Length: 300
Image 1 (cartoon, rainbow, N blue to C red):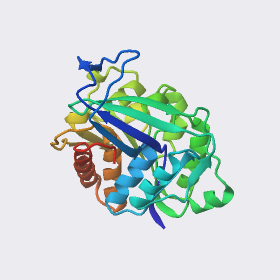
Image 2: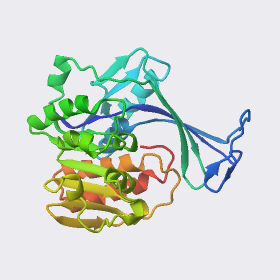
Image 3: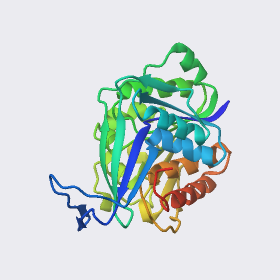
Image 4: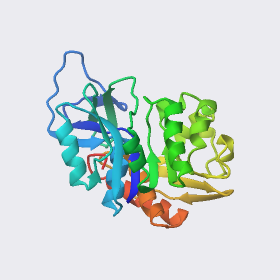
């Protein structure tokens, strides 16, 4: 029995950092035809599926990840890194033509520019045997999967919900473009939804600066009877549950790399929540784990 199965992307992340990468006013100024030797390189596994599974494993949960990986030069690296972190690869789906890779340029202050490629028109082809084995878990978290249709994700999450599993969901900026009406069937499958402040503002079509996060934000998306969590960077995070609002201040950190900070928060929260911690204690654990991840290069 797993404590947690994550559903999401597994990405090969390639990090580059150096003073030769010219930047100004928050932008890298790279020239077409330019060549920029860097003094730091790091490779890591990323993507919401991998990041949350690894993060929860780091905190003592038994985890597995359901994701698609390609039969390419990155496959063995991905498998080795997941197994090293004690994440089961039982539910990885092989696709000969699939590729998911990011080149990440890091600034001296830890901010990033990401160049990302993923094979388009995805689908998760899960066998009946695998689908049955997926129920061998206490909880499931589905991260951002913009390439998968809403209906396919609804069908999969409903399978876990009907089996009385703890279902948690995170959606990203690309999916939010579909609009609340289209996403509502997906939200209905989850007991807990985790967003960042900008994603929440986009979801309700409101300017971020005008959102009052200290008031109950769950009703605006029809989540009043469930649990909504909104992270807001250095402003901390909020949990909305049963009409109550709890604010968790951000933990102090020496920021080196912000990649995967949101996934780290999810992993920290889930690890505590699955251990039957209170929402408030789980929020504290989430903030603490996220603060540790941003202090080093890599999303996990």
